[in-house]
Length: 352
Image (tube, rainbow, N blue to C red; front, side, top):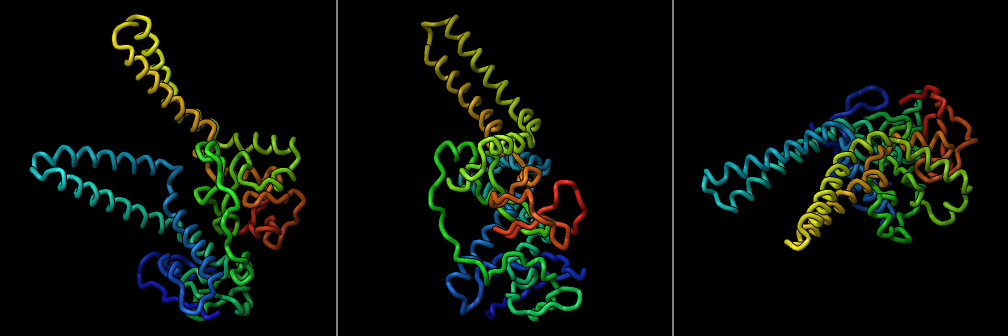
């Protein structure tokens, strides 16, 4: 292969495996690629682009920073709505101001997330054989004495052992054989690109859902029923207290609406009966929100779920049995199926 890309001038920076500051590979260039690539390589490059872009979008979902973003959006919406009539800009001016303001916020937060995730993004590209700085394909390069591969395009040095899933050995990306059902979609039981975590080498990988429904039928049946229940119980414990705290508000609101609907139906059964029905529908809605929080995967941090899977001897990415897996030279558990690497559950030290 002779794929090469021009490293971006300025922009987000990261460090290679020799500690030298280098530019971070551009997502736009990852998606665009270069002339002469085979359809298989283009499909793999597009899959990598989607995974990195999703990681940037989902960053901060589990922190107070995301709550701050929501507050800023709400305050901005209220502020523009309050000021617009004073300026006599009309609906079109109000709509334009909303679009500009919120687009600016999204751009700022995406830039911050990109800077924060720079090492993970670079190592994820490296894990598939692309230079984390310029996107050059590292196939065929020889390792130097320190184990690094030096990119001939930009000079960035990367440890060869971090290439765990080289693009030149990967098959073409196939579409899923079946779509998730309605219940799986609502409860978040189908793993997707939203459930991303970095393994011990910094490579972004998909993490299984807490109920193992993202496994194929054969993979699911291969795990003993008792062990499946134990694994699900262990993973569902992740963030349980946080889920109950988050669900408290919709539970209280649902109880309030149920009480109002019952009181209204009992005290005034012949006066506007539709009001009691309307209040009951509101109660059911908030009860559904609470059920989604408690039963779904939306409030389980993928990284913490991955650690729970490793403790139970299951690869968090593909479901392979790694309970008896030997440690590699870095003291990490290597999954032979998906080539992800995980820190052992006993907490042995391993390089970042």
